[in-house]
Image: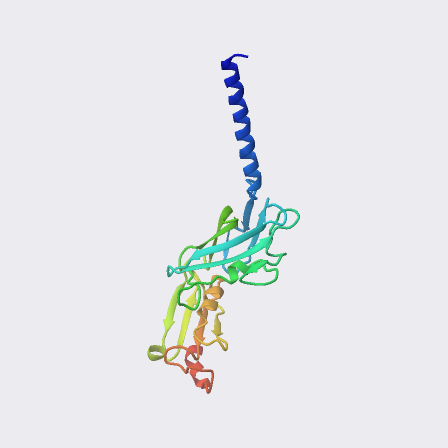
Length: 240
């Protein structure tokens, strides 16, 4: 065998060695190009449930699933939990509890229901027009192996929103009338022991076509700071 033939043979051996090394590294990665993350439906109202499923994982592998969203006020909200894939390589929060994270037990909506933020503020601020976007990721060993997004919204058309204050109107509350609403039944919504204006409930009812007036009776500007000695006459004005 001449020198040229020997060089060609060595080149072939080197190529085979490199291919074998790449295959071995890929096999040790723990991730798969077949990993899929599906959230369905991909567009829904905020009070409707969604299903989140990750498939194509290595059985028993640890997978962190995270959700991130920026609300209408620019505040970033996040949640995450780690799951062990079942024997079929599947993670389904509706049927399995996380091994670590912000909640315990099987809960399909756990990652959406327990999102937190480091910024001050009582709750997530939903946009008055258009949907809010929630980005979902599946992560293994610090690397994103699958991702998707889901759009969630209060209403398909912006309602008419009117705020009332104790000083100007005699009570504290929020009127939410659906777009195109006709004369018909309406709802009066009172909060509970948490205090404040339960306007988010009025938004949800209006999204279902029900004109709603939410009323605060303590823990709001111009009102008592505690649930004690609330005069019933206070409710005369919003009931008119």
